[in-house]
Image 1 (cartoon, rainbow, N blue to C red):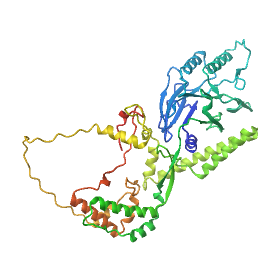
Image 2 (image 1 turned 180 degrees about the vertical axis):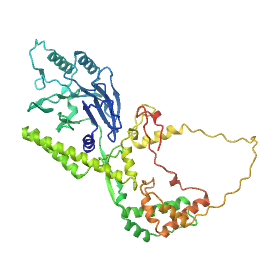
Image 3 (image 1 turned 90 degrees about the vertical axis):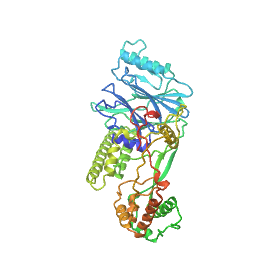
Image 4 (image 1 turned 30 degrees about the horizontal axis):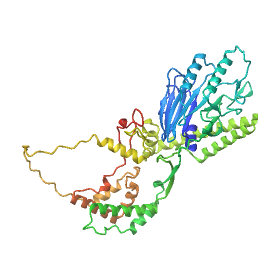
Length: 511
């Protein structure tokens, strides 16, 4: 799983299809979770099992026919139409009845200008020659296995599928000390031009099948954005203190300015210090604004080991000798060892620092929870889907605003006893109290909507002029009985709890 997560991050894959996953029902979705991916499983066959990961930027509909154990289909809604992605596993001991069920499902798949089909998986058709498009063996054979393979291949041809793997090797293993190579995996499409390239990679984990990276021509804009984020952990404390001393914290018109003007002036001065003392880092995000994050235990040693492993398998693909195979297997074993050590070292580091900084520890735990998936697209009342984060947020605001009703005003006929209420004494706000509150801020918390991190405020709390400016703002708020409008903003995230991700009715929790 760890190697799969690294591949998903490095390649930023849209879909990940796995046959013979052997996940079964003993593994929960949370244990198999990959950040920014939704998982769909078919665990009806313990000896096989199918699994499809879909990036959250895509809206899909899943079809799992419980009468067919090793067949799974999803429909992806793209700007240019629908993409039907089918993942299947055909067991070598597959019966005639099971093959018939799969062939019937393939015949039901639509294939139009806007509906394209990609069918991939382990077909286990060793007697099919994909170069000539025929089955090896006599025409009048009575071998049941050959007949099944012939009927399966005839179904592929009859439904107009094109195959993209001919004489390439997809599985390598040792049998009785001898290298055995075969072509068992295949990629079929209804549109032969949809495949741009197929990259054969090293096996994943302990599998003897090669990994296939398929690059598609979907004509769907998959551009990425590069956003900038402050690296608060690298904040220059000495420079913050120096800039705080050089800053004039007195308000330009404290006697006639509103609390909004005062708060904005104070915020601008703090942000000016932040821009000059806190370095920035670049984050790669999708066009929907979803951050592409690497595994937290990723290190240069692990990256170097992965490159060595991939290079060793590439050498074996170029020259499939026994020496190159042993070198590739050894490099893969070393990579798995380093990966396990890196993850264990990271988890030990988190456990040791939980008493001093529990933020990373609990963030790591939350990353393992399936319920942390945010809502990327929503279905609008007209049946269309939102195309941006802002559009989704506006739709959520309109939906939740409908649950509020206007309160009826009191009529003049209401007989109510008026009770005299003692007026509250003015609040006494001192520099000493404000300074203690600022020094007690938790620096492990994240920045708010204004972009000011508690770490910066806590450092500036040692400056008496800064404390006096904050105290003056609080006193102004107390005098006018009004908070600045900027303080009423909040970061709201919609969490998916159950049901279909795009249905507005199931979004019932906010943070």
